Amino acid sequence: MKLTWFGGTTVRVHMGGMILVVKPNDAPAGLDRAELLSGADRVLDADELPLADLATWRPRQAGRLLDVVIEPAVEAWSTGSGGILLETLGEAPLLLVSNQLLPMGRWAESAVVALFGDGRRLVLLGSALLRERSPRLLALAGDEAAIDYAVPRLRDQLDGASLVALEIGMALEV
Image (cartoon, rainbow, N blue to C red):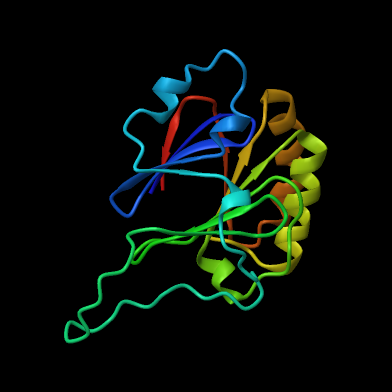
């Protein structure tokens, strides 16, 4: 999995052999839309996706070779609060959160969770997440001031989770 944050809540995700662009309409002004969407296999917005209950949702399990079923490479759901959940076989689920964190099942302990917002929002969302579950990786998407505010307030709550800051235009390989 590879994540590239473009600002706001706009992300390009390489996952399951596909390139997905998430929330391109939230991209900052001045970003070349054609460049953002170039090569995308899918463009996703939470309003267009089926709803997932994060408390009961479970990742798909790889089928047996005898059970030949062609499944979509990447499945996508809305969390109902503006967030998006992405899943593909063989990779950690990816949860993108900007507004509200909803209760999650045990699957979240192996997930990559990206949080978007200013410093206070990152701390609010990150603290709520870490009280409930410690994900495999917590990625913070905010400007430099937001990251400087959030990291010292979250680092003592990580309980085994890794923490990374996303930088605009820089890809993060997970």
